[in-house]
Length: 142
Image (cartoon, rainbow, N blue to C red; front, side):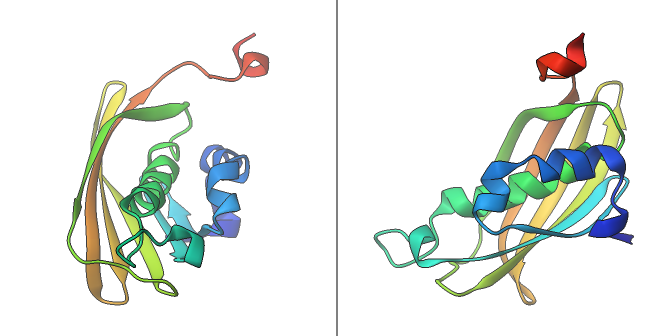
């Protein structure tokens, strides 16, 4: 596995342009073909009314790792669907690490699993289904 500085060009460019992830302080730690590892610290703004990390932020971290893994092959790839199972709560100050791994690619589709952990403890398990498409950016479609 490579470090973020050695990420595949397609995934690196996609993540560099991801303002949602960067705005939340998500970092790309490692990336290789079909895999990615991202990190996020739970901030006070990410905590819900129960005093735990809002599931939407945990999902976003997992989804960003999924995006880096499935875009590592080159063609623009988006989510065709995804689901998440929340296993344990995360709290303010927790450092969460999402590790995405490709399970299978077939035609323009793929299946990826992402484990979100706090240290050795599993916080959530995410499964994403991908689909390669033509670019969504007008300047790349011409």
